[in-house]
Image (cartoon, rainbow, N blue to C red; front, side, top):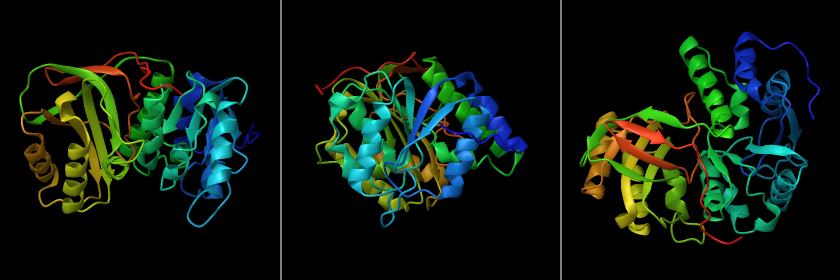
Length: 322
C-alpha cells in the first residue's frame, strides 16, 4: 500500500481525478516484462494514492535482470501473487517492453481469477491474448507508468486523462463507441469478438502455443511503434497467414507511432488492403503508444456499422479450459 501524500502538480492531479471513481479499490502493480525506473514507479504510486486507490506493488517490481524487470521466476511469482491478493480489483502492468514470452506458458491458470482483469498493452499483448484464450479477464489499455507521463501540452494532457478515464470505464464494464475511417473493402455491417493489440508482438506469437486464435467471428484491432514499412508488412503477412481469416470480419488500426511509412496512413492502408482482399479495413482507433490509448476488453462482442465501432459492455468468453 502506498502512503505518499505529497501534493501533485496539476497534470498529475488531473490523472488522479480521472481515476478517482476507483477510490477505495485495491489494485496490484506488477512488472511482467521490461525493467522499470524507480522514479516512474514512485510517480505512478503517488498518482494512485491521490486517487484514493489502495495500490500494492509487486515484491519484485523494482528488480532488474538485464533489460528485464527481474528474472522470469521473480516476475511470474509477482503475477501469481497479484491475483491472489485479497480483494484485488485489477492487476495493472507497469510497462511492456519485452519479457512476457518468458511467462506465458508457465502461468498456473488455477491461480488466476476469472473476474480480475490484467491491464496493459504493447508486449503485454501476449499475456492479454493468453488470458482471453483461458477465459480470464483482460483490458488492453495504458500501462501504469504512463501515469508518470501526463504530457507536456494541453492536448496531450487531455488525451492521457481520457485514456485513464477509459480504464475506469472498462473496469466498470461500460459499453463504448468509436468513430472509424473506412480505408478499404466493403462497408457492410459486421460483428465479432474483439482481438488484437500490438502487431509486432502478435506476429512474434505466430506458431507458438499462445498464438492468436480466432475461434469465432472476430474484429482485429492493431497498433505499433517504431517499425519500418517493410517490417510492418512482414508482420502483417505473417499474422494473416497464421490465423483463420475466414473468421476475420474486419481489421481496425490505431496509430503506428514513429513508424517509417512512405505516405503515412495511406501507405499502411494500401499494404494491409492487399493482404486483406474483401475484408473491411478501418482506421481511426484511439489506440496507440502515445497519450491517447483508449482501453478495451479482448473478448468483448462488437459491431461495425455506419462508420462506428460499437463495443458491448464486455465479457470474456471462455475459449479454453484452465
